[in-house]
Image: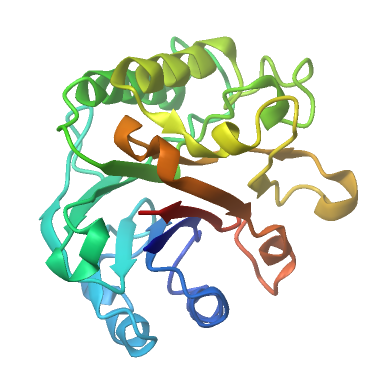
Length: 269
């Protein structure tokens, strides 16, 4: 059985619902995990998404920012939402694929949106950066308690951890998302919990991988100053099932795009 799971920071699901529907129609992933949906639960475009063939949807949102959702062709069970840093912001949602998913039954899906951290990489000067570091620390503690069994963790983790996850390692060492304190925190929590970085398993360094290009660039494609902020990790028992990780770069050039593009993980179960 081939299972495909896509992660995409959509930067407002209502504003970009046409792009979501286009992606679902053209690429047909089994599961789509969205971040930064930016809408409260009562405004989530559930009817439109179910009309596209994804009847199984779980989501957690809030007005104007954050927000996560999982859309699936298969029934989803045991929906759960975790809070971090004593906040009820919508940055995590999880679900388990039901028995109808065949060989994928029981697989746990975790969808995260880690705080961006603002612009100043100093926790004493920037509360947003302090929040990000605290979030990563709590995520590290959670990762160590990850339940046994097959699991996938995806999302906009807002950290480009490796040298070739950014367009210029040297120039971005003091830029939020690639500072040593962030990259070490993310790689430490991943390694301690045993998560496998699926993209780097198939495309090891020094190959460049980007999933995000800033809106500030007048010509993002020509400048190509990207970063790999969107990730797909698998539990060790799924490592040998990873067949592909695809970055849909062309989506950055769609009309009124997100600054992130879809990243699709393919497993052979």
